[in-house]
Image (tube, rainbow, N blue to C red; front, side, top):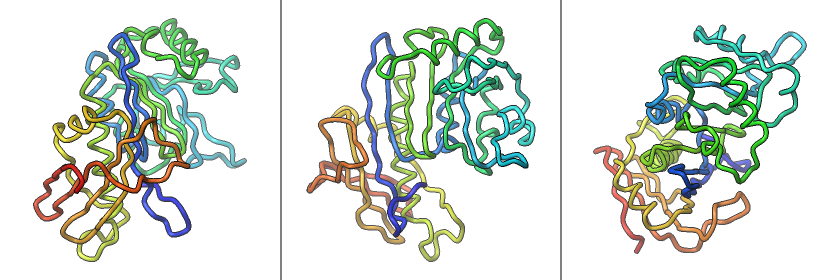
Length: 281
């Protein structure tokens, strides 16, 4: 989990969802790393058997001249079989595109994002297992020429999920799976609670701690109440974690402080592993 400030305070939860038309949902969220959402992305890509990694930047893999290794060599080092599709020099410098695409079985994505390395920029999209080179060129052209406010999946009808992660923290995604936004919000609550519990005596000796997620119902309840949310930690003990959740009039930005009053309170009972989301008192 990312942190802010010299004191390393946990990054606040930010979540925004809207329907982009044609059955596509657009989500902006923080704070989550790509690997922390990999299993959700795999589950959302049920119609396709593969994912294409279309952009990747990292400082975890550098050559002897301190230049980043190409994605294909990173996959080879991780032992993840994939097909490499070169785009060539035309993709150089194009935001959201690498000079080569990696196509792998979607079940291998958690293995690729195994937590042993950190991509500070990563974009991927699901594609058919038998995707052709021509179709990959078409996908790259759409991604490389899209406007910032344009739903990408509206132009890529055979894909169900597009993901873009920035700075190991910020998430943008599009999906045709109506269950994915609530699943992402539930995961964000668990990640924020886990970041608070990490290091507490008797709970976690390592750099992370695993906590249960709320079921889909509480997250769906929040989305039904408002599309934009910010969450901040309240009381944290060995027995419980309290997160204040406030609805916002527009998507959260880094310079937006938590409102004076929360609208809902999410409480994790650490011992029983259960969550309760109630209107704030």
